[in-house]
Length: 280
Image (tube, rainbow, N blue to C red; front, side, top):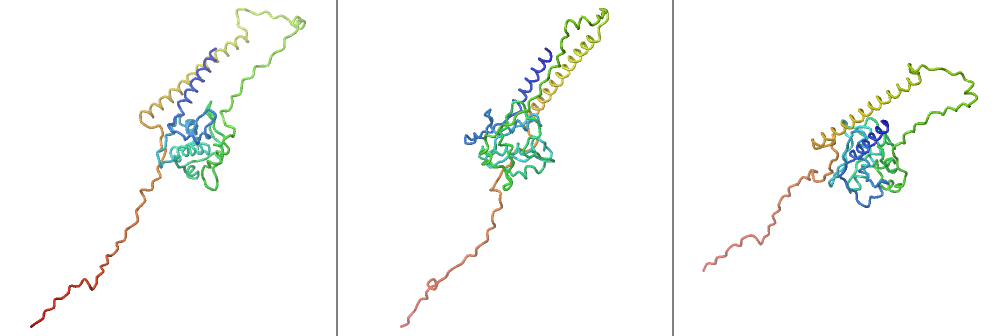
């Protein structure tokens, strides 16, 4: 009973933490609905949930015009960022907002190691990662290939691996009546507990203590994540590094102007005419 209650608490916390972790205010154009997963979640939402595995919370903010999502910085690069799956999801998140994207070679610059074609961390329970996100960036362009991703929009999604179920202990065959009668009867002393009962009592006590310790651990984890999110919210930012940067064309140096000498055109007609005097 205690173990069942503990599982319910763990499931409840996991579902709420997963729901709180995926945050984004980015909106995709309807023409990019092919990029949504089977749960109608946009690539921005899926990327946010995967990035939150390493940080506890990650907000994928909407991009203003001429902005794109930045690669991970040297200080904050982690396995959740340094992989082609999140790169592809964030690239499509930018494109579905009609924004630009960055090259894969720039994205992986500050990563100590990268995962190509896979997400190196456990996928959160209940999350469905679209299959197209596992395609590698195009070699020739060094970028996410949206056309190839759309052509493979129906690839099987990836979800959390199922947990192995516990197998029941082997059943001991029941002895027949005749064999039971042939065995000698052993008298028991009611004043002393038998070794079997003592082991069973110890096992129950150990299970209660272990369950209580697990409950404390889960509660501490929930409090830690809650405080982290509250501190981030109080500070006005969740991300430790810039999430986007701007492409600008109005900051380019203007071409130098070369002064053109003025030319004055004179004509003979402009000369003053002399007056003629006649004498009588």
